[in-house]
Length: 281
Image (cartoon, rainbow, N blue to C red; front, side, top):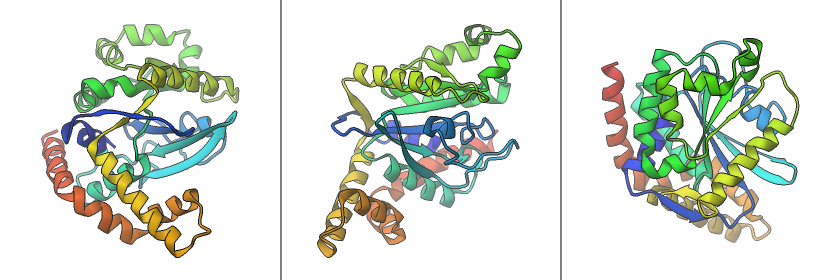
């Protein structure tokens, strides 16, 4: 997902698109092993085990995945992302970035930056610095830091505020997050923590003019998806927009033809930049 974010900021000027629909599109961004697919993030938000989770340090999510659900009448679309930050396989990166683009189209309302509370290591400090560079000034207004395992801080009698203030690098990163931060207690089943998060997201969205984050690349992806939807509905007039979109996103030919033609060259050049950076680490 880091490659996607770099693409959104680097490829063209970022902007805002009007959020006329009722759905809320959330992208989970996190370093491998911080539990971004565990109950601390996607599963907690959806209130069910929609994403695979594990206690191991490895990344469970091998492919970009989009899951839908609802919370108190609010339709949610959550895009979980693989640990692309660790891979040096450019071909895989390109494929997964294209999946991310299609799943996010016409644009996400929020990037949830998942950080494990109490364990902000030097390696993660490097990741945060890269995130800051990738997001850029405008994208920062669409980010919220989501601290998982807040119960660990409670056990040590440490507030998240103290945890942030005691770490200069983290404190600097937090000053860039336009939507502030939120904390999840992994062991809690209380839906109020999800409600509070969604309220913070809504506040941020309203502050952004009721809009979602967008770019020319995301707009191009949405145009391609819309064309595919029209094609599918022409073949089957009884097909709803929702079902047609699902079919379009599952169609491997559509993924490799419609989107790839317009973005592959740009993706490859950007992925090479990150590939070179990873090789120097």
